[in-house]
Length: 237
Image (cartoon, rainbow, N blue to C red; front, side, top):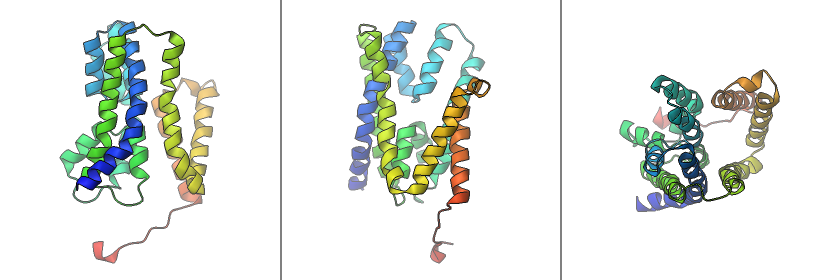
């Protein structure tokens, strides 16, 4: 049991360091937007979603209503529902509803990518080990950024925001190189994302929805072109 937990912690440490940098950028952004250090830290403690948090700050400081805030978070974070459904297929039968809710709270893009890259089923203790470093990395990074305030130049802050994308590329590339179907899925999703970003009428679609469409479309295309063969264990049916 301890071995599984510490393996999860080890797998989560690269995310920990990546989240410190992006959390630091969010902390600075929150302070420069008019929030207090305490408010910025509390946001990261109770809402572990980078895009959602960056989108929520302008709504909060401008006096936007709760419905507006809820709708923006629903749209931006809708992709996590799909990732949670997919991740649940990797769980062993000892993970109950409470465990699923706790894991879903920190089921970020990077946590999902690391968890599903496991060839075998993942246990509850492994998932708890995996989500702890990202959670604390995000909170610690935000706290450091909030305390530092707006003392760093804008060019430095912008550079820090790129760290999370580089980390996600590092997670995706190994399985994409090993598996042609996975690599093609990534390529298709990239092409579709570019279409949504550059085509005038499609660029108005919220990023959360375009990410979902791109991911689902890429998965469906490759599922039809290169389906994964699975073996059924008669003893478990």
